[in-house]
Image (cartoon, rainbow, N blue to C red; front, side, top):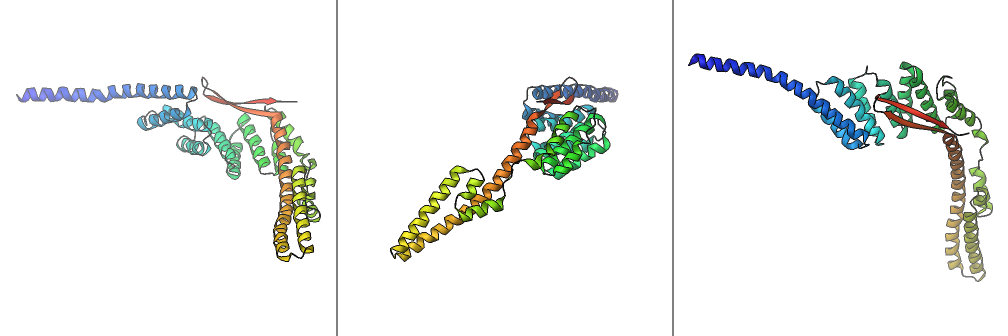
Length: 308
């Protein structure tokens, strides 16, 4: 009886020791299928479901290091493609923290910097792109220089932006684009400009004149007629010795008069911002950059188009 029990225990032990090996083989195949499913969702631009499947793989298959590396990276790319910039930053931080030596680390840093730029986190973006410039070479470095220059443009640091554009190497596909921006920034001082002080002074002298100066003719007409009507009413009331009513109308007129001055100054600032924005948008329209992902090669590309 003891021999039967011992034999049964031995058979059970052999089967038990063999089972994990069999499970590991099935587990790896399951992980590969999981990754393939996540990739198919990514290719269909179903980014949110893809993110869930990539995260599921990371949780269930921590031992499948190669797949986890790809899943961490593609989670960040999925957030980036879905324009969830903050989540993309966090995902790329996780990827870089776990796999700093991965061959896609440079691309992950670049997309992280682009996410920071899209969130107007300009200082953080400059740091990220600066790190790429220090450690990368070739087109990665050129792209980081180019995007650093664009960040400086958004920060309205024109001189530094021009200097940064000049650092784009001649062999880069971005060289001509950088030249367009650099040349354009040299002319930024010549774009139309309205002085807020002049607009406010003109509005104080003649209501509506400040708006006319800032090329807002309809607002100028409204300001002039409204203030003229109140002033005329106040004068008539005082001539008729209706001092209380005249005082009330004068009180309201002072409000309209002050508002006319404030609005004229604000209009000058808006004019300057609009002309500057239009000028820079004109430069951007001449140079169009598109982000592309090649699934077969697991690579990301920038496509440059220029108009002359």
